[in-house]
Image (cartoon, rainbow, N blue to C red; front, top):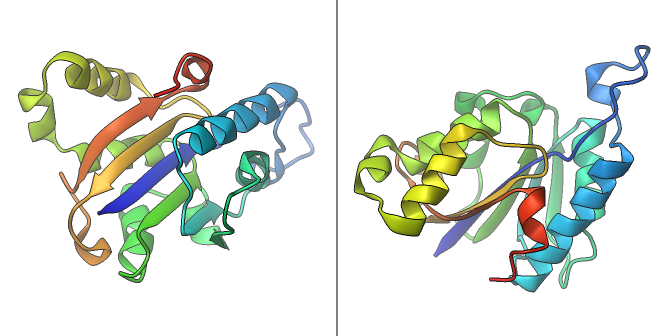
Length: 181
């Protein structure tokens, strides 16, 4: 079964007006959150085969903070992922070869949040109950920096779209210390 991991970049600096948005680095809190996400991914055995990462400095630094990996994934920094919309994100995912089982996509809001909602699909909200419903409600409320969603994908990458993913887990930095599952 294929797996798609969506990670929003960690907290970045806003205090240098000379820097373009694309050049903003992580702040200390962001670096710490990135390390916590990396630790949580290792604890869950989440190792991507392919990392698709926005070319923005903060996303590349988020990727650096996740390492080390137990095996080295292919890493593709992409200008097309910088502040990408859902159609642009899906276009990139549709081009992934079918032999890739696990993708980590590191990007930006609002595109990542909107993509997560599209993958879940509207029907999931009416059918979910208990913990699944609570997780979906939390996802619907927003996608904070350094938040990670884990999706099971049953179909091919080429047709990924509305309702094409089953949300297994959604965690934000505040969950990392409590989330050992």
